Length: 316
Ligand code: URA
Ligand code: URA
Image (cartoon, rainbow, N blue to C red; front, top):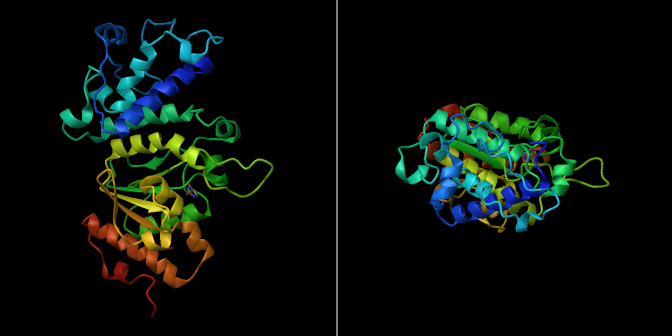
C-alpha cells in the first residue's frame, strides 16, 4: 500500500465514491465489459488484502505525475466495483458482476466477516479527508459482531478512541458499555461504529473535541452504509444529535426525536441521548429516558425484559 501512488489512490477513491453513490440510489448491478472481466480474473479466495489484488497486472498504478482524472487505466475502477457495490459478492460468486443482496440467501457470519475485513482494510488507509488523515493516530472503524441484530451509531472518535483505534472506549464509551450490558448484551454481541471514522482535528488546541463538519460526514458515510449493508441489523440506535443528523438527515432536536421510531433504509432507528450527555447531566430522569428508549429497542428485538430491567432508574 505504501508504494501506491497518490494518483492511483485518488482514482480508486473516486471510483469507490461513485459506486457507493449509485448503491445509495438503489443500483445493485454495474456492467463490466468482457475485456475488463477477463482482466480481473477470478476473485481472490481471501479478501483480506488492502485492495483486491489483480494478479499479473503489475503496471496498474499510473505514474505519479499524471493527474488521476486523465488516467486511461480503467481496470482498477472496475476491479473495485465488485467490492463497494456488493461487498459480499467476492466470497459468494466468482463473477464480480453478480449482486449478493438480491440473488443469494442471507449472508452467514463468515461471509459477513470477510466483507467487513475487506471494508476495514479500505477504511484503514482512507485519505478522503486529508486533514483528518494527517491528524489521526488511528482510523476507528468499528467493533463487535458483524452478524448482530443491534447496531449502535455514534458521532466520531474522541481522543481515547483515536489512541486505541476502537469506538466508545473513553468515559462516554464506558457508560455505553454499561448500558449495553444492562440490556443483556455485551460489546461483543452488538456492533458499535461512528458516523466519522477519524477523530475531528482540533488545530491549535491540545484538548477538546469538535463536531464533525457536514462535508466530513458526507465523505465518510459510505463506510457506515457499507457496514450496515453487511451487518443488516434489525435495529439501529443513533446516539445523539449528530448521529441522528447523519443517519436521518434530521436536525429537529434530539429531545423531540428520541424515544420515537424512525427508519433508515428500511431498518428501525431509535434515536437517544448520547452517553456523554448523561455524564454531563446526571439527573435520574435523563438516565431513565435513555433507558426507556433501550427498553423499546429490546421489545423491537423480541428480547425478554425482566422486572428488574423494567424498573431501572425509576424513582423509589
Ligand atoms: N463519542 C462518540 O460519538 N463516539 C465515540 O467513539 C466516542 C465518543
Ligand atoms: N446503565 C446506565 O448506567 N445508564 C443507563 O442509562 C442505562 C444503564
